[in-house]
Image (cartoon, rainbow, N blue to C red; front, side):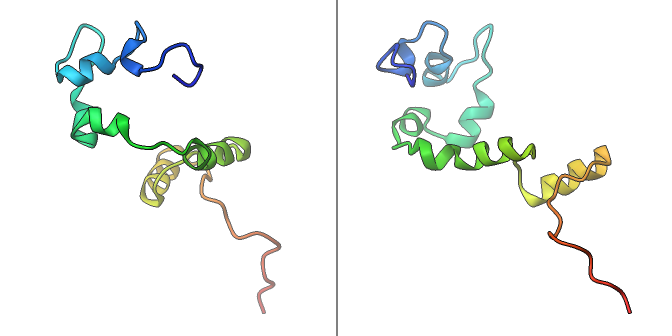
Length: 97
């Protein structure tokens, strides 16, 4: 839809939307994860979508090379990987007396 190839998501031949609308898995798509999060999938797709706002955090994280997630998720991933993913306080460390 964003590329302007079709007017409705369900018109795209390789879209999973038809399976989600039907509420049934097919040989490619498992619909339950999305339906559990959205409830009425048709209403969810019909909601207004502000692309600039929605993608702002994603673009910022991508430019900084940092993952997006809840603080709890980031702490968990840091513990699992040993990587510093949560931004630290900027500037030099205060001198201890």
